[in-house]
Length: 236
Image (cartoon, rainbow, N blue to C red; front, top):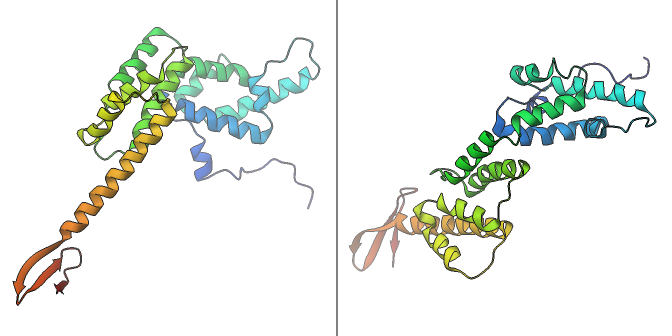
């Protein structure tokens, strides 16, 4: 058997390969590009797709070939709509194709910026949503706005996230709003996640205490029933 050529069926086919595919949802573009560039790094093509060589720079022919390879990798991971955006205007040009996608899904146009601000200011934490997932939703809009050249202070971001928290977080919201402590956004996230963990523990403890209830009293004994397992016990 001869030496391996590097060509043939991809080992990535399967769940890992599927995770690298872009579904055309603007909200997922930043995450997808990060994964895609990581894939190109493993293939030795990341610098090629991100760096336009200077005119007359050595290795221009090799760069052109690698740029075509980067394009070939890119189009394998795009949904039909995204592929249509690049297939005519950037055929065999990985750098140009990536820039077209960036302009379309992460551009700096005024309508998109307004929509992102509207999304951020109307954030609401869902009932069954964790604080971590809620913050990730907020940070997706935040990152998109910053990539569009918008300046967002930590205080503004904290206020936007506090506004969307349910009443169970009201003590935390009041404390942050009235405190003189200057929090960075990273410090705020840590405190919010810590508060959620504390509330979950407190709620669980309260529920556990209420499981054992007095069902009767005979000769000074207190009969308790555990409503989790149904067993009765006698407390002296």
